[in-house]
Length: 331
Image (cartoon, rainbow, N blue to C red; front, side, top):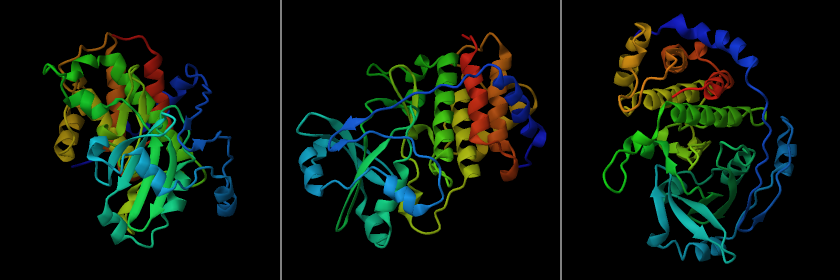
């Protein structure tokens, strides 16, 4: 498939428009959960690994405490299963609820020398309204466990492809403005991850199932920075995250699953190149009154997935454009 470089300049042009209408928002996120009464403080970027380690605030949690909070990892406590782990809903003796992600034994055994604790500690830098925070960890022979905030909300995948109890598609709930809100929030979350410390945090697995959506349709990115669990050779770069985010945008726009990404990308890019973006839009939602908003979001997706690796926009650029669209009145 030939890459279309026509849209590589669209990001720079849109940024100039965005600057005048996007204000700086400062939000503080305070988290108080089981065994983790900690107050996050601003940490300036530094390349000094020793200094970074000294300032990290997550700490190991005894496995016995986690077993108690999950009723011995009882199957009734399981709320999800994924590529890396089984997720349990844990409740402390004080009533605090959090998520326990128990890494699959096969990954633990295949990477015995993995510096698990230092990797998890580095993820604790992520502190943003559009990111689900890492709160702690536990290590024991044959056990690797990650503690995160418990997010009792549906994933974007569920909203786009799931159904209600009476069989109605949940996607009917996502009109154009809500899809833009979700896209902009998720973009800001990934942008934050990429800017954390000098090296940043690469997500490594951006997809609809890793974007949680709360009752106000605010997106929160989860399960980031965990490619290291697969062992050496599993490195992820910024451009990979940008491409994956572009697929999420296409999924939001079209309502189509991106499992067979080659076909979806080819189909979508053809419509965008030919200025037939209305045909790209999920038929379950109305075309926005201002078709320019749809075209701009489609062009952002195109720049993420249609350009060569070196020509892809940064997540800061993507987030700026999507945030400006979020502020525009639309249906």
